[in-house]
Amino acid sequence: MARIILVRHGQTEWNRQERFRGWVDIDLDATGLRQAEAAAERVARWDVAAIYSSPLRRAMDTAQIIANRLSLPVVPLEGINDMNFGIWQGLSIGEVKESYPELFDLWRYSPQRLEIPQGESLEDVRKRVVATIDDLTARHEGSTVAMVTHRVVCKVLLCHLLGLDNSHFWQIAQDTTAINLFEITEGKATVTLLNDTCHLRTL
Image (cartoon, rainbow, N blue to C red; front, top):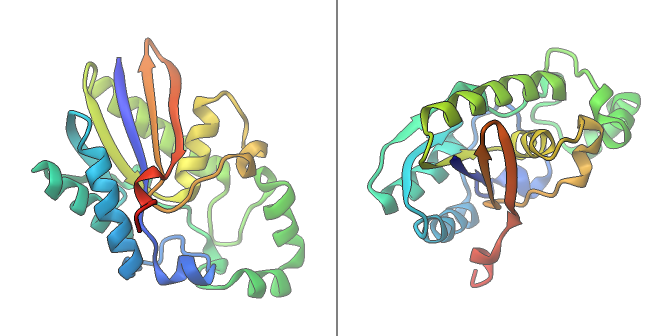
């Protein structure tokens, strides 16, 4: 059995503004740093053997705060990078809704059908993320590892683990520094914790 602690990164200014982030490299804001510290305390309750992260700063900085608490290095993984939102990156929800109304309706109501110009689809993200998880679980049989990544990555991966297709994307909630826990035994996953933010109650 391999156990994966899946963590969404802390808050950024663009999270607060509800802008599409994608591959734009953004720092955590002050709240995000506090959230990461709280998540580190929570993750430290497990016996973590390794920490992996999306290479983007908002994820790497969250992961580094957790790693410092556990005295472990952070290993960047391209396979769990955020979704490339193409021409939407940097735009607010309102701007996308106004400029690309038909595509935005797909995003809200049929996300599995959306293909953003110069970007990725949910299926593109899912394929690379699942391949990365398969590799990690094979490499860390019998161990617990932490992985810090992004909302879209968490949501499509959890859909995969729960046997759901990408049409269920909006039925999976993922708040900033949400902690999820799943175990994989003989190729079958059991999700034991989902979108847990108990560690943020004192903030």
